Length: 460
Image 1 (cartoon, rainbow, N blue to C red):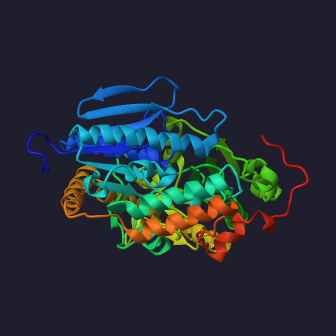
Image 2: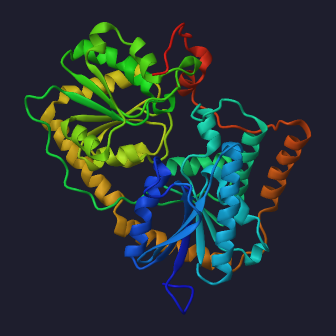
Image 3: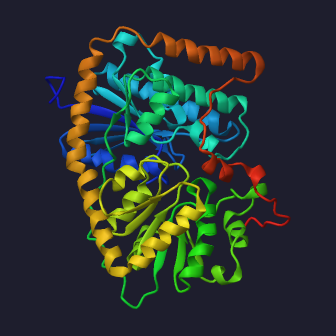
């Protein structure tokens, strides 16, 4: 099981998000994959950010060692700060590798945390490196999910660093075939990434079905932002409530300034509803895990209307709570449902199809929806089982380590392609990036010019 005869297999995972400081999908992924691996006897070094702005420090928890690195954006801004994190992470990895403490390292592609490490030392002596796909920054930009809508030189350079890391990695790993195929085509990778789903923790008992006298309830959980498809959901809901006047829609998640003119998304969405539909919609705000669990217990259907997703934790959570799911087809959620009875898919961004599929589920009634929820729970228990996933990951680690023994040099085409873009950026301040393309049905929601501009839109 181990490439080193003196100790067990030891890996490093670089993730800027790690408990207790995390708020997104990458942090949730790290939260569960680390204990899954350590429970299988693997030693894990986690290199993460000290979000509380304290000095660098080590924390030990059984087979897990956590290296917390301070990272203060200050005046330098986000792109410079994450570059510095990449440098600190690279130094830590180099020290661990040179002192024979680790056998392989894994970085997220987002934020290019592995770019510094991949350019250190001679290629044949470099630590075996895996890049784990979540959602690249350039795709977030295409979906208008970054703080700045401007593709300025620092952001271009950051995107190029992400591309460099993906092209130079020894292996790219993906949780869904959807993003594996997308990355293979978009980045011109030599091989399609290996697909291993995310792991979950031990699932708590599922909540019972909602009470028989409870109104049909649809739950959305996630940030209130355009990328999550909330505009299509709200427009679809007007059609749903016309056919099911007693139904209600609950939206659990923090508000954002993703509306036209940078305004409150929640305020903007309410303007899309007529008065009768508005009465059936409730924005719950950002909830604690316990409060969100209570909302799942009251819901008949969980809707994930995202315009583009990889392998979202919101879908894992919904299915784990034994709730029927309605999901967009642009992402790995189709694979999560697969051929089971867990739920339905709709054309991402198409509010009319969303309305029809949601009405179809409501028409089935509580008993049939409860059966779908049971199928959803069973699917996640099998697909994301931490013991099974840990076994697959260990086999993958060993395979990459063995293949790296034959490695001679990095992909020269990758180096040349990215270097040309850096040269162009340095010379003119711009670069002809081949940015991600979006389906027309999705693009209409992320192009601000297609929205009517609101004369007044408070940022509440």
